[in-house]
Length: 91
Length: 224
Image (cartoon, rainbow over all chains, first blue to last red):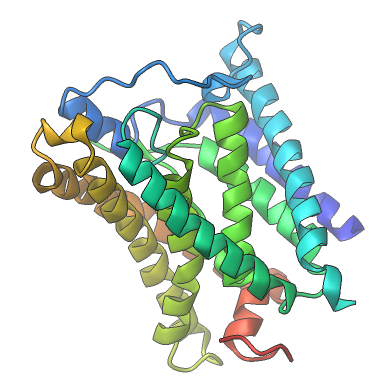
């Protein structure tokens, strides 16, 4: 388990380093919808951190970094539970 | 490529939910007879990595961006079944907490990214004529990861094109070429990043490449 600590720290460091360089341009699908004049509706479900930001925090870098860090640990936890569930029968 | 709510008709939402659900049940059953317990922490960390990587959009051309999807990457790390389940977790958390991808369109997003991404494992296996030679393997990873994004974009183009919101704009005759033209380029980014990551892991930590071991037939479990 310990040998997975290094990659986890590396993920968080990479996130902190790369967030300022991430492109804000629309992605492929958003671009296609935009070209065809189709508006994205206000989603039925907004979630806690829409577009990877914490609405309460003004600084966009800090906001995205915190949302991303939360997401990394959230996915880590849920995926670990899934991992325990799908490997139950083997040992 | 995450489809927001409102883009797809209820029929397309229902159909893609049903298809994705069938693949998830299949993956779950296959996973339970395939993987040892030691997979759990690797599955957790690689899912977390894919979540983080999907946040970082890279510019493509003409004011459009793309990001790593990571389906082929996961399938080489985890094998096809855990890759499908892992990507589904990432997409579920994105839809639930980050408003990235809709709830009603979740089935379509799972199909376009998780199912197609995980199944790209079988293309890697098919293209790798000699699994002992790493140049064959890396070339196959490059082609499969490119094709996984292009196929996902094709599926997405069909789903939105058959939905009323886009049918007024010309339907699939417009949406499919438009989606493909951007994702042919975005797929090159996917292929470059995936091949770089896999080749580095192959050099530094070959033991974590469970998918490669499955591909080479080195696990005692039978994979069909």
